[in-house]
Length: 346
Image (cartoon, rainbow, N blue to C red):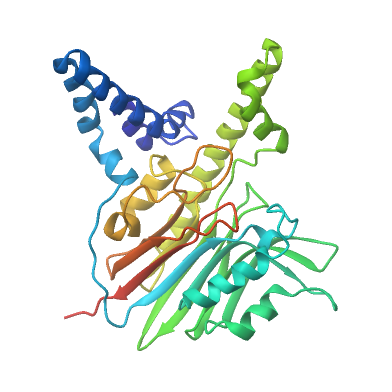
């Protein structure tokens, strides 16, 4: 437990192995809970060892699990963060109505700000245009986009921010080490104040179908060579993602330091709360989940272990309430909403 907590202070660029301990934290926690229960039936004094281990790592536990009671705030800003997985463009869900279900959810939630990752737009006559359809039914119909790449000249993939507030300006932070990820910042006029919202999607592990299949079938594999090769590939993918996120995290945080406005940072971070990436952001900003969330708040849905990897941070100019991880599973991420209040200077 202690080593998992310590791993967040070690930049993966300098040493990548500790990052794997952070990834293993939920399993280490569950193992200690199991030992506590087991020792209570065998020899109670030994249960103290696991209790002590959890207490030593309590700071990590508080990032992983929360209990909060918050009240509604007047004049709050409702923000939704959602990795929409291209609105099920390739029919991963095997349900052709998924895109419309996502749209119905967005309309029902009626947020003031939406931060989308894996956003998809096609500019071709006769094809479904995501953006143009959304602005017809969303109250938050002002938008800015940042696309990482395109196919056939008219299909675009990236991030998008939709808002009901006037957009003052916007800009893009590109990542030199990854053409598939990007950060978009948008300055919004909210009453008499200007607020900067960062919408980011930083490096994913990019597991292939074969990698997922390997994880699911490892227990029945008998060929030791195949097992070694599969483990090696997964290790390399994880290590590469850890180091990419390190560089991207530093670049975004450096940009945040230059912001002349109060800051909200929302996005798919592709890293857990027990990671160098998360810790670097939480050193500078406040995690909305820790302030107003409940439970584990896992946001990733998939065959790999489920983690909270989508975060909404803010600086000290804000307070939050009603942090909610929505149950809908139309994407491989749960959407997250939170009410944010901009504090006034006395």
